[in-house]
Structures are given as structure tokens and as C-alpha cells.
Image (tube, rainbow, N blue to C red):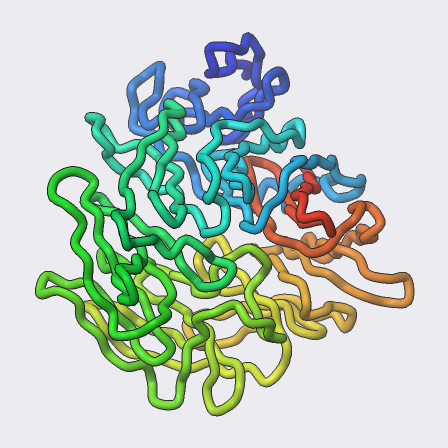
Length: 430
């Protein structure tokens, strides 16, 4: 069945066989209505033909697992001629990137080309960015890419491309806007934006209403902190010893498990998060926080139901690189294996004596990826069901490190940094 591309600037035709398809003409992502089958834009919330409610499906590796021939050929490659310190984020069929110069790009997996969307300005691109659906003056919630500099917090509407300054620092204030030196972040819910702010020597967790009164600042009894992040309906931050959260009664806190010290700066460690990512991982109403327990690298699993719940410590006596899977669970590359965490239980997902621990791994059902080393040198290895495919590092010129693996529509994308801090992409499409 063929249908017209949903984007007004394109006259392409799409053979709809899956819920997500890339237009062969313009390369943009179309989603099919589950009721009538009509094509719609990736960000559509209602079908343009029948009016049915729509929600872009979560990333799935199944098409790549089922499709024969996807990994038999070298990937398409793309490059952005800009410098990057942050990992990209997949959202509704595109890969969004924020450069260290504050430029936002959108990568199309169809063409492996990135298009500049908007320039946020200098000072952006050092701290992590988020994509959240919020109501920012309009009648309906819409997705916004939100980031902070030391002096302001800005958002870009992914629907209209409009820019909005949500907060500005006053004299004597600055926002903690670096994920490189300290694990500062920005978070949002339907009511407010949240970030760390310095007011003179004091460090505060600041809540900035999307509409209404001035920001509310909650002083933290520490010099350095990580966050904020949201678990369920609650916003948290943490210091080396304590977890803080905003409640109806103000700021609350509780100490971590005795003997656990959280990492709140980006010192070089053999147990580490993938390049360009924040170290903590939110999974539903729980969060994994890296640190040290009894002199050993560890992840603290803190449940946050009704505030401060039960906790567990998962210790790692060996080197590892970890990242968060689409489901929220941590995936770890360890020497000779890829492992996953389900709550506090470690489960081996792939065993291979050539797997190395210094670069991140990916695992989603019968599809997995990691880096291996043997007599022939280092290479990317992709596992699909019982088969494996090797891609020598030489296919990725000036390769320095892997930043992220993403499922974007029907494509598998490996984003990596070069030795010049440029971002390049390897794309395999089903």
C-alpha cells in the first residue's frame, strides 16, 4: 500500500508496511495511523485523516532483528563539522544533537546527513539537554528541547522551531550548566523547570515556574551536587552523601546507604559512563547513582516511591563502561561480556572473550553491539540473533570513542567522536 508523505514540502510516496517509515524522497520520518493507515508526521498527536489519537512508538530493534541483510554491508556514514561534548538523543524518528557552540542539529538516518535547526547561542552545549513535552504558552503541550548556559535557560520548540528563554540569572547568580566538570542538568515537568543555581557562595536547587511567580530557590547544604532529575512526579538532586528532593513541605533530604559515597565530578575512572552522558540513570521510579562503596566502584539503586524508599548497592570489582538502554535499565560492557541490570541483579546478555570494557555496549533483545579487540585490531561487533558482524575501526576515520547507540525509526545508529571532537555517524537501515 502506497501513501503520500505527510510533510507538505514533499510529494513522495511511501510503501507503508511498518508503523514507522522513512520517506524515500525527503528522508523524513512518517508514522502510520493504527486505525486507518494514513501517514502522519513524526510529531503528530492526532491522525490527519481520521483524527485518531497518535503516539510515536518507542524505539524497537525488532525490524532490525527480523530484517536479513541489514548488517552485511558497511554502514552509511555522516559527519557534522562542529565540535561536540554531549551525546545525541533520539526522539520521534530523528537524532538530535547539541554542539559545543550551541547549534542544534537533526540527523536523518535515511541520508545520514544532519541539518542545522537553530542556534541556541554561546554558552550552550556544555551541559546536558532534555526533550520534554510541556505547555509553554500554547493551548497544547508540545515537545521542547531545553538546555542551560550559566546565564539563562532556553528552549526550542520541535514543532515550530520557536525559541523561548525560560529563566535568566540575576546579578551575583549563575546556573550550573556543565556536565563536563560537574554533573549539572536541567529538568522539567508540567509546572516548572529545575536546575542547580549558585547565589554567591550558596548552591541552590531552583524551581522556575513555566508560568506565574518567580523562581523558588532551595539552598543545599553542600558545595557540589549532581542533578536535578525526575523520578515519577518528584525532582531530586544529590551530593556525595545525601539525596535531596522537593516536596510540598519544601526541601527534604536523607543520607545514602552507610558506606556509599556518590561521585559528583567527572574524574577519570575505570568504571565509567559512556562519553557525553550524565552518570546517573533514571528508570521509572528508581535511580542508579554511581559511586564508591567500601573502596569498590558501585551503583546505588535507590527506589524513590513516596520519597525515599529502599536501596541496594551493586558492587563492581572490575572495569566497565555503562549506559542506559531504551527501557531505562543499565547495560554494561565488561571484559568478555555484555551485562544488564534488572533492579540490583546482574545478568549476562552476551559472552565473547574479545569484548573490551573501555567502550559502551548496546543490547535490546536479540540485537547487541560492543567493541572487541583481537590480533586484527579493534572493531565494532554487532550481534543479531546467533550471527555477528565485524566492522574494523578503520571504517570510522579518526575514531576516538563511541558516544551512543540509537534506534532511529528502522535504523541502527552508532554516534562517535573523532580525535578532533567532531561527531560522526554510522547508520545501518533495515
